[in-house]
Length: 315
Image (cartoon, rainbow, N blue to C red; front, side, top):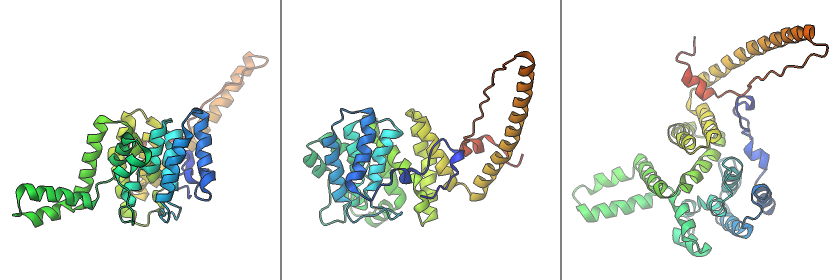
């Protein structure tokens, strides 16, 4: 994966897919996740987790990400993010991570997966509710709402309402409504959605449609990053902001801020070196074996937050 944002500027490693190297061997990939979870929760129900992984793997067969990677690597990465970045070790939420796109992405398949299918296969209604809650409202769902409206209000303005309901913004609004209503009852839903969005943002550079990438980045900055902070996932919120800002801002602005940081850092490092030299000289005059001062310099910068703090970047 191309490291689109200089690693030195962030508190995180954006080379996430390369780190795991998923997609070459199904069993080896699961073993990587199992070993990571075993460090924190050795008594986890790995049979249940493996059942979810195998189910998702079969349903995603023949599907690929924009990067060209097998699609199952995305939910696998989402599960890994839950473990490593969110410190979530709950078996049910990890299985939900494997399944979070199954309903939406199989609707055009010969045997589409439904919420009821998941509840029956895993004998777990609660699991099916989580998966359904993070599933986007589809055009079919919108048409169902249209039919309900038609039955209630008649045919007078049917075409206008149908046109309105099929608009992309309305589809997104209905998806948000569904997410909000579920969030009130179950915080696991938004945690899973944050992990999903985090992996999507970290792989935005694979998008051929730059306008779509910018739209996702904008949505992340306005909605998901804030929720990460409110739920206490501060580092996740920072990463969502930083990676999204790269796409949402004009390239010139991002590079300009980064250039300012680089220039300022050179000055700061020079000042630190001079101060350290003077301090060592002063200490050597007092002590036979002078203590070595430890000077800390923070090298990671959050360009998004710096940009918000700067009223005029030209100053």
